[in-house]
Image (cartoon, rainbow, N blue to C red; front, side):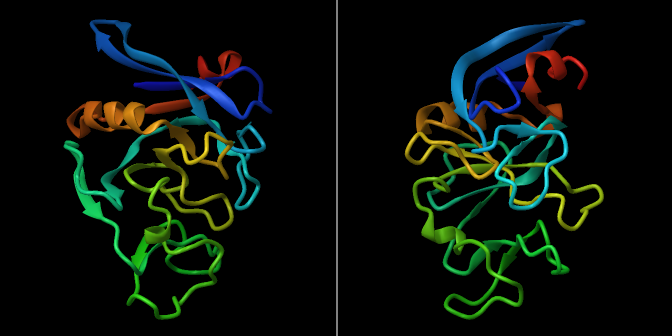
Length: 192
């Protein structure tokens, strides 16, 4: 389990900690570290483009990605190349999914961000938080990642850490354990 606790709903950072279960108890495994959150804090009613990080408890997608080589994660890993996108167009049948198109060609969806390969710092390595996936609801939000902090500023809705901290987390995550990430204020996180 990963917890990301924000002081208030408007906080743009929170305390990230790793936990492991021992019997009925949760024991701290690592952290706490400062994680950067969305420019508009955390939201239980996340919408596409609102610049908020979704509040709740979520799993992780079965594939991790990165512009850099696999850093030794236990998940399947896909190296990001030119033409790799995470689709943010709510009208597209590919909404909130990874999609590769031929490098340099115009994607068959509305472009609201860059080709992922053009973010070599933030997307050096990332895990996809399993938000708005079961089912995918158009407009509810897309592309919520756990990734490297670029300039140490708030994100557009993701959760970010320094590169060494992120690598510790990504290597620690074990798909066989079905890990969760719980994001929210201290008052709400207990409800998840």
